[in-house]
Length: 178
Image (cartoon, rainbow, N blue to C red; front, side, top):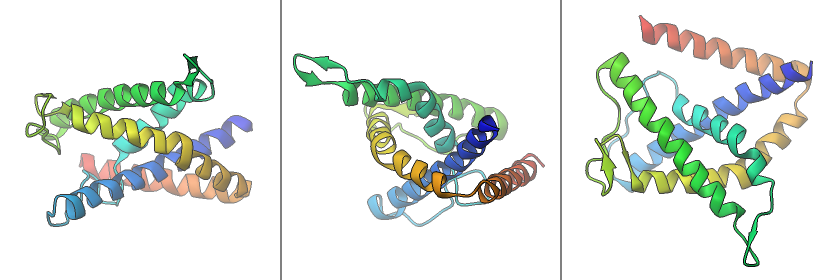
């Protein structure tokens, strides 16, 4: 029963981070770069699954590191290690996503060739640093808040919400594949 509850929570976290990622991308596009609005994803809804995958990956892979208090010369370096871990993991996921999208759709949705230290326009240092900063926000701010909100849900409402998310994502994937 506890595994089901945890799985439902991860489905909800996945969707929350997918939506937050979409909002972040739209903010960059419209406010920072001054471009016109466009749906930043391959799916119809306001979410980017790559952000959900990235957030769950860093939560699962770096949770134990985040909870440690690593001291070097009287300075706690744990947040720095979390930053670099997130940057590496997120950059790896972004690179894999670019190859997956190219394989399935013929192209990927971003081009980092204008940034210094890019690799084939797929990844670059600047976005990797932003991913590291984003990961610090996730670990030390957003995730504790989401866990509190999840803890307040009844079992029934958590089950219904997670089920609804899975149905919507399944429908989107089927539509995308057709």
